[in-house]
Image (cartoon, rainbow, N blue to C red; front, side):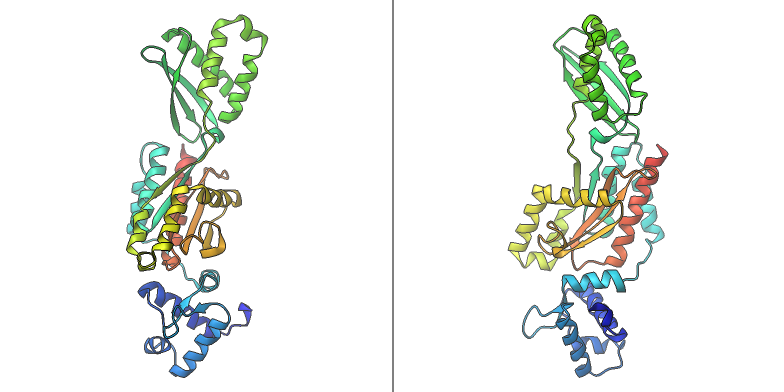
Length: 344
């Protein structure tokens, strides 16, 4: 059906979407003809708008009002009519400077803050699952009483600290020996969950039955690698929805959106889809279970070192967002994150 739209009708749809993104007000035929982009009468313009409404690209929020884009209209605009603009030098510098922190965890946290600041929409960062990260080193530090600090370092530069309670006496020298013993296992380039599986196998082995030091090292390793497999989700700037009239004027819509943001599981499912797809995706309105909450769009891009995808980064905003500007911001942020991970 969309293939049958002539050039003039496409241009009118593009003008309606751009005007509505800018003003937030329904767009009428007189308003379009006054723009000077179309050499047609208001009557002809009304006919074109009526055709776009019949095709499902536009709708009237009220009987006497102008028209606004539907989810289908936004989708056609994004797929066929959108002209992307590269991030400005100032925006590129802000992203590169913001993501120049010393550790990967700090960069991931800053990615959300920078995207929120530049886009003026909520941002989301899916931090890699600890259990899926390749573990390169384990260290132990003796604390007071029965406490031991386990430090897990992954290949991506992430550092995870875990406080352990041990039910057997252990000296600082024994912890050094345990560190060396466990790091021999890590030379095989295993993920944390795989390391844990290998450690549990070793605990059942004959050596652990007669070598007390080995047994204690393995017990410490098993406790240190018992980490949650749930992704960590960082969301910044949800308060920006309170600045948009489509939400402030519709309490039910706002409650639905904030409930979805609070529960997080729908958003996690959506981001996981993008991670598996390994490419940027744009969800508009009802196209996903999450984006249907409150009529929002979600623009998400995967990131990771080389060909590996370890997480996602993106923006959540109203369907009436400036796609031509926001899409490149998300894409460039993902590129900078990927480059940072590759350099680790």
